[in-house]
Length: 172
Image (cartoon, rainbow, N blue to C red; front, top):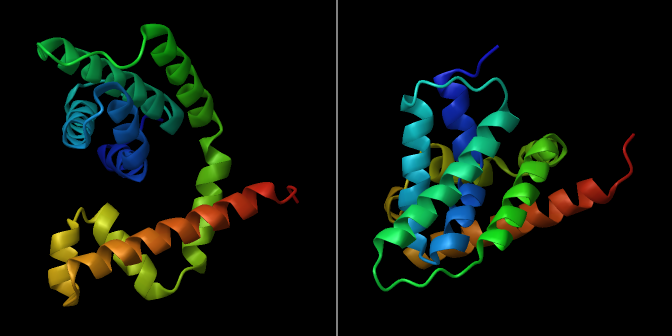
């Protein structure tokens, strides 16, 4: 069964950092990488192609982000191409392999998120699923922008450690 628009959007938002990072490796510019992610999400929702699985969607998203990045570089007259095509192809294959194994890591992330306090889960939901910018979160929470950045950074570190621990445990 093909993924619904909601499934597509949820999966892309869940992998936003990775898809943006794939674009950043090509363009070396955070703002452009974010623009590319948005273009990839828009294309996924409007291109008329159906994705049969999350792996197929993510593989397409990484390839599309890479190609959009290369196209952006070509439009820039003075921007150097930072990575050789061979290296980009190796990265693309690595991302495809990771997407195929993403189920284990994704389950570890879900388990780690469930272990977080409710306030922490709410902050992450507001930031990444609701799409609020850090400035908006600071205003909503009545906190300073630096405090929001630090809290998100601590949450990212905590989740990374938790996921690494869960992945290191033998299956059982």
